[in-house]
Image (tube, rainbow, N blue to C red):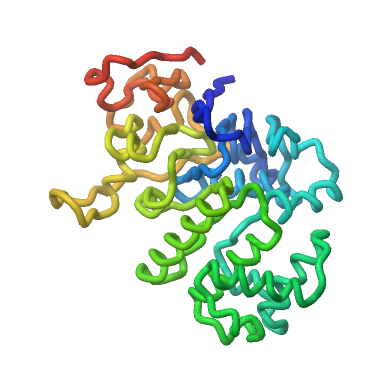
Length: 343
């Protein structure tokens, strides 16, 4: 099985997370869906990674696997998830419950659905603190919530209000405060600002980035919008058809994408800087993961595909710490330090 080696973590960053050959399957009436296949990456303390791709590419399945929140029809077909050296996939349900929020937390997309409408917002954060074993008095817990509110740009006086009294951006900030409540080592933000207008979206992303840097947490951002992720991440991983097809430093990926799919994603959204270029539509649809195509999963939509692409899964092309799983990586000829790893 093709196994993409993760990027080397910088020497001054303690390793927080290792995902090794993660594979996830869903059983449906139509057959078994190969939702995630052989995904590997690493994350260091204080580092941020963005996972991007179209809907159905496996991003959220990776996140739910990390949290131990896969649905009943899912099964882990292989791999390891090591958080601080502990393989989360070997923990019992009760052990994993103790890890959630204390070691790994998640900011979900629909903030209103994450908050109980009949309880005050501050009390819900306090309940998260108490439920996960952080011994504290009520007054200390309220002071902690007040600090968290200030950290995410909320007035602490709002903690005794109900969710319906908050705007969409305020609710999202409250959910972020809840995720921070137990000082986790790692936070996963799954489309954390999708339902918000662009001004509020930008503010929340900047605040989340500042909090992450201040607390030295690992952070994984999940989004279909590669432009949003680029503003707040150190590295970007591009997923397609359940596989990680490109991984590299954010600046390098944007400056010189190697995979045709990454280039297509980047050309599908406008830029406010530099030359104005026409937006391009990516023809076709993602493949059926019950019966995925042979060879490179992107070949039915790729303008560079040939017979090798249609029959053989691509070896990995490396350009330093930046790599892509592609037989015809873009800008290959312009680089003098490209090597290949066999499948």
